Image (cartoon, rainbow, N blue to C red; front, side, top):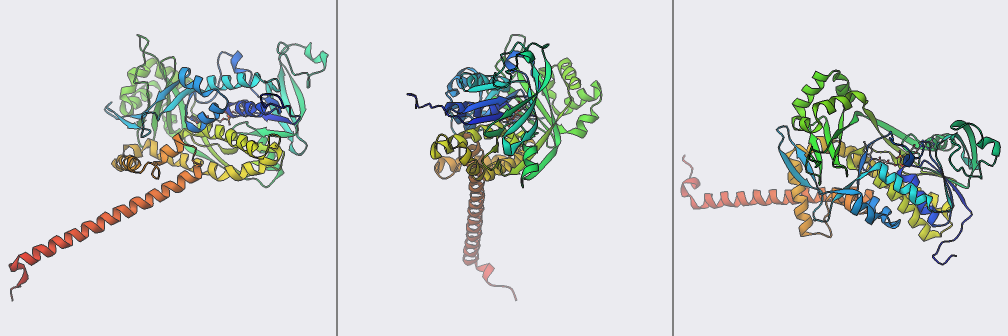
Length: 485
Ligand code: FAD
């Protein structure tokens, strides 16, 4: 053991995918002394001007924050690199706005962070450990999971200092830059953090009895931008998550540090397809999102809308997450969900803490033996949040407009104030605590039952009262007693 508790561990871990979860778990394992090789198909985002990919900013909440806290990164992110969002700001058809708070306390907010920034921060953190080697431009092609053998297609850039374990052939290095090559690697444990379309998972499906289901929803999403005003300010109130709920579809906007907003339009693909020209697009926006047009600007809207294609949204459940003591799926590779609870990344980050806690409990070098337990601890919870996210798909675009939703929210908050330890609204449990997702659903069912009982109780009380009043009236009014013959 070193003085700071770090000890060298000779177990080699291959992390496939250097997105949010892959770069984070590399940090956690490096801290424990594992030899980590991180393979990422894209090039280094820190070196490229523009990074293609999904959603520019994300809502970060407690589960994700607690993982970042463990790595000592939380404070910096809250103070410098994120924007607090305290409530939903609902925009109605007439441009009127109203607020529905996220929490019940002033210190409860979610954070808007840039995906790229977060990814770069985690990659840089991982790189600081001498036992982490990051291999960009390495795409997993083939896997023999039983033997821990992976084959990558690598775009070799001669300028980059390449890990000598793999490229010890000097001749290879002298060839022209950026040529493809197959690279082999052997490791003791493989972590599949390669996202919703995971290649590691595809190989696992072939190997074991893996339950797998996926669902594409009818809606796709497309990102637009609200730039800062001429005076360089935010064009809308920055400390909210703006929502334009329109029943069958919706638009949302999250603030960025550069005072712009990233706007996401979620809509059925068939409606996207109907908006074939500028007039149709502007008419559509005039009808459903009129207050957003001056903010997006007509030119900006037209330009962005027609230069990008809507992307699909997929929800994936599988079980188990591990193959024996060899392979583990984490993050979207294990549980992709629709983005309507803002929990995909948070849940993936929580995977990292759960694994870390298991190593705390079972021993620093027991990664292989906790993979089974990880599946056991995680599957039901991840399935629960996948279901909740799908439910919120309706809540966000439609139910927030309904009076019953507002009444329920008000009632929930009131109950929470009265009984803070036993009554926490579902959204708060999911967002502001680490209550296992599965328990969040159970608690919500219990709350629904209680509400049902309370309502029934009051109904009966009301009925009884009416009966008593009627009886009293009947008693005191003699004309009611004697019926005419
Ligand atoms: P990814 O981020 O997908 O990373 C996977 C990585 O693996 C990528 O870098 C990819 O290049 C690499 N890779 C893939 N295949 C290979 C291969 N064969 N070989 C090598 N590398 C490979 N979550 C939230 O918590 N809050 C939000 O507000 C939120 N908003 C969202 C909005 C939208 C529109 C979408 C689509 C998602 C949103 N999410 C949100 C979910 C979040 O984006 C994901 O849960 C998160 O990115 C998962 O991280 P990951 O590392 O598991 O996967």
